[in-house]
Length: 420
Image (cartoon, rainbow, N blue to C red; front, side, top):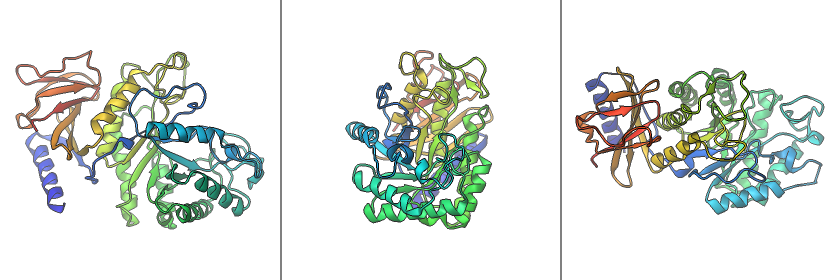
């Protein structure tokens, strides 16, 4: 394995030197991605949202009405109807469920009158640890063998979601980790996932300094960028998180992007909004580039927020429920990356990004390429042996190479198929 990795690094370095690359980075994780790399959030799958007509492999149940305050609105009075339906739907479709644990019901809250992003008291820690323990145990025992992935809380550095201390969050996390593992040793536990870019990185650093890494199998982070920033800024943020893991000597732990997205235009979106709105014709390219760059940075999951949200990341039209082009792009990128290793990415002097993609199971190799700002005519290196082109927008540009070996490259990624 070490020889293979070394050879890959040398090949990437030669690629950078030969073709005058101005920026390059390699993926530290050489394992193939699975279908579960592409994840979604859906808010109303139990009522009006049809099951997505795209391929995806994982589903994070946040803002889906199945947190603690929804499941146990009164002490000892449980309501599992929505969560039971979600789990059955996921099983039928072969999709993995990631269930975030948290949002304290008011009756259990340490500060029941305190405001939150939801209802009063929900962002506070529970007043009594025994209530938290019973909640976690009840959920894991009920869904043993059906839900295998849990995340502790949501955005603990955001006071709309959590107002307790970091020490309290650590205690909640470690108690939950012990309970989950005692019932289901094979379950995967994701750490509390902070947000707000550098602020989130600082929170994660402090949390791991206190020993948070020992109570998780996966490090979670919400890789939201500033709304005006393009996906090409994502690898820098991922690298900052990696540096924190390295500092605390847990660089081998997987990193999951358990939530991020951009505001995409749709029919109900107000003309004026405080967010930068991605136009409809630009959205498929942005979605595709974000997922490819996330994979190239070594992320093992990328949960898009959100399939049926009318404020952030809408992938369907809210009136017709029809899948937008951005949603189809997400599904197609998932197909490109299923079983693949995205080993290295580079941006050349002409502004074209290229990411090397291989599928070890088949021996096939290709390159995902794009220009983030415009369409250009570009000639792939002869050594790539490019035979054909797959597009996210097949109707706008020809799928074949021109007679002179050039191809049109633009903000929407293209997959160049190699000779293997």
